[in-house]
Amino acid sequence: MPTSNVPLTHIVLFKYAADLSWTELETHFHNFQALSTSSLHPVTGKPLIQSMKMGKNRSWEPYNRGMTHAFVLEFESQSDLDYYLTKDTAHLQFSKAAEPLM
Image (tube, rainbow, N blue to C red; front, side, top):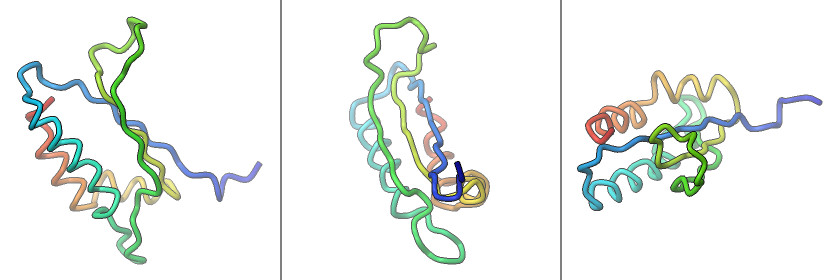
């Protein structure tokens, strides 16, 4: 089966600081969701993120290691994901701002 048209899945898990306020959490979610339109391909100018889903872990299984929320992002290619992770200004700024929340 060719993989050229199959989106690449990137999963992000967060374990938030215990003293995080609801407002801080909502702002973080809003800022993460904004990456779906602000993280742009350097050549085409199109969004790097093809789709994004997010949610709270509601499983009762004891394997989450404190991770409370998950984000599932899809990218067109490995090179798009690599650019997003290492060079995309919007993502890098988001990551830096998010660090104290973890």
